[in-house]
Length: 262
Ligand code: NAD
Image (tube, rainbow, N blue to C red; front, side):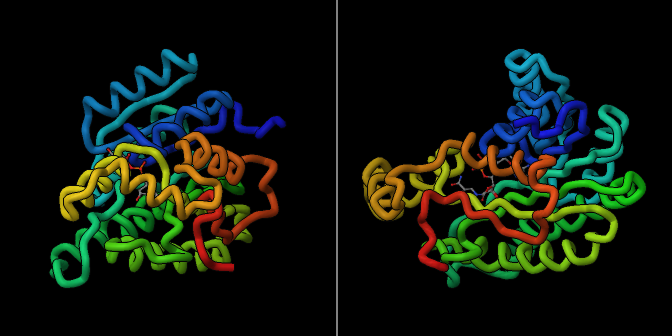
């Protein structure tokens, strides 16, 4: 199937590794013109170099922290200069830290709000004027299965992802007449560095082997394994593609059947 992404300018946030990087890789394989950014300048440049070498595609790397409004504006302008105004924006960021309620003060809540919700609002605000002028665009947010089923010890994610859900659905209504489609991909457990770190931390806290913890998680996933980042990225590309021209305001779970919700 031709996804209709050739030469489309695509901006992928938080893409030096994990799901974001794989999303960028798949857009490149479709012939899109891609700009990526992440906090660590060396890491994001290394990712871009590896992606360009592998795919032969056009990818530009920038460094910015999604929690910093001025940096987001700078990186958005730089991306426009490099690839043109994005026709597709993929909102992504690192996940907020795992912690229970009693360990979370106001500073942790405010930091998670800026990381998980406000970053998405700010980046979208930057991208919308050019999408409106172009007569359309696609916004795809990376969220979490926690919008349907809370994850243990993930108080910040379980709370703030629902803010993204409400924002995305409301925005989808507001920009539909402009031809802009807004959708959200909700990964379940996915084999990335983030999950390896979470399992290490949980193992250390519980005195358990992270490999055993992973097996316990896999036993609760109907498909019996973690997702590969490529399986999450495929859903993002679909929602950004011409094949998804009548889909807006949805949350697409890519969780191997994990969520216990209808
Ligand atoms: P990851 O930690 O492997 O990669 C995160 C990327 O974001 C990296 O490139 C990192 O440099 C970048 N980043 C982090 N904080 C940033 C910041 N403040 N500014 C700019 N860049 C920043 O994570 P992942 O597993 O790919 O997860 C991506 C998103 O999907 C996260 O929000 C995560 O919570 C969510 N998610 C992941 C899983 C999973 O199982 N991996 C499941 C559900 C949801």
